[in-house]
Image 1 (tube, rainbow, N blue to C red):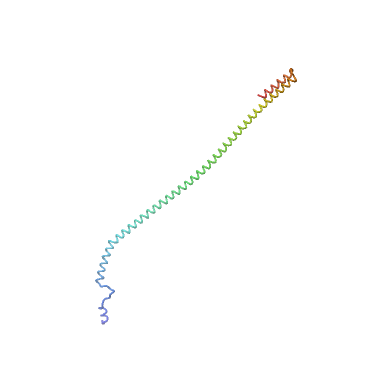
Image 2 (cartoon, rainbow, N blue to C red):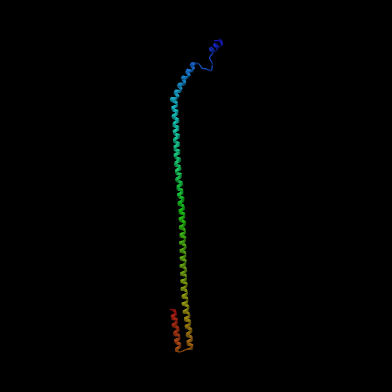
Length: 178
């Protein structure tokens, strides 16, 4: 061997490479820490993560359930609103039909009442006309009788034919008066 190679081999160790004992003790400590983390810390960590995962999944399930219930309630409310709108429309249509029927009935009743009033007024007018005619006939008859009496008294003082004329006139007046 050349003295240069020998000197390089026995020369001071590389400062970047640790000594063998340091490597062994570092490996032992690393192994102990690895076992500790593997059996103590990692299971607790996994348990915490699993608990959080379950909690989150539970909350998600509750949220989905609540959302489904809300959707069902919303659908029920919408169905109830649609039913209420339909019922309202039916009630309005029934009320309009009833109002139209009542209007027709009121109009017919008013027409019948007006016809009765007109008929009553016609009968009253006819009765008043009849009584006026009777009163006029009676007045005309008495005037005619007075006139006839005075004519007969002046012209025919004891004539039997005049008496028969007056009696016939009086009989005619009585027939007309009845």
